[in-house]
Image (tube, rainbow, N blue to C red; front, side):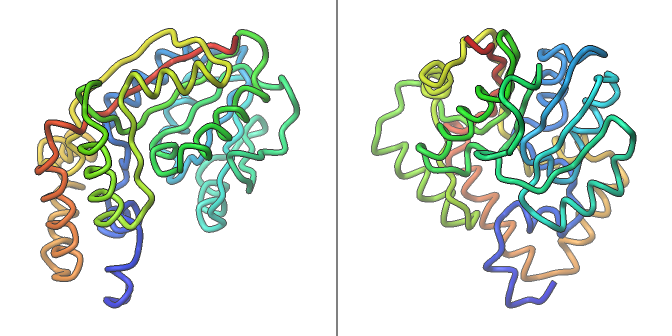
Length: 258
């Protein structure tokens, strides 16, 4: 990656460029809890919004659903996913999570991770409404996102954190409190069934080892050491994460189409 581009790319692309494969705020553990909470099984038609590198797709597919569709906007990711995920019941489509083109009431389970956080509030609602449209009655929708804590956090503090995250990550990062996430789902046709939280420690050495494994963690560390520009940006991101550490958590929510 050319040095002059490093300051401009979104944070998740920066992490991927150093070899980090798990890019979810709650790590592999919260992703597992999300998929287990959805109770994916052999009768399910599953849709994943923005599968990215396909880590969660592989986990969902271990539950042998009747079908799996990944809806991915990035064309490079689409090509990569089509090579990684193969089978008669697996399809990767190039599309927008707010306008998938899938039929009404055609799936039983849908989920997305670390993607609503990066959307403006009206865009969040559009994606949730799309999940509602394609799900059958009683179908389950799961999200794994960044959240703000406590639920009583002031509007000014919330705005400050959102601005800091957006600036350092080069994305429109707009995390909500758990109450606000639940209210957003409720307002767009879902009944919240279960909420789970964990610390947001995306860049802590212990979390990286837990998510990536010891040897990949060493490779990530080496990649950071060998690239001063990347190291500088990652330090800046980590500094923001640490500054607002008490206010940043990861949340997984399972909801049912009303």
